[in-house]
Image 1 (cartoon, rainbow, N blue to C red):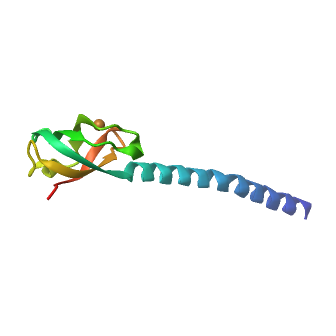
Image 2 (image 1 turned 180 degrees about the vertical axis):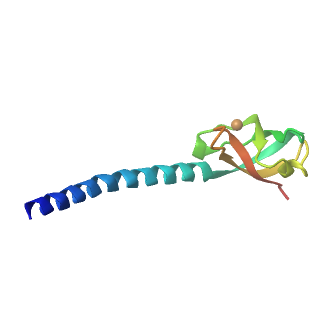
Length: 114
Ligand SMILES: [Cu+2]
């Protein structure tokens, strides 16, 4: 009987140790996914478009959520087709999100301001 109790206690202890580790792993991966998918709305003006490279140089307004000042910079588009219908001088509304592998903010959506 004493042997049986020891086995139960050992099993419970293992369970108690295993559960928090599993929970921590789940939380970490969930948190990483949330970060990667968070996107930010930005307003800007197209300076130039490199359609073949899928890049656009944009003078963008400040993005307070990221602590970014307004500036002119080159963004990579998640999909080259996003840049198909815009040209130098167009005012645009676009969204950016951090690419999980490159760590760079890339254009997710983009449309000219009507
Ligand atoms: Cu910038």
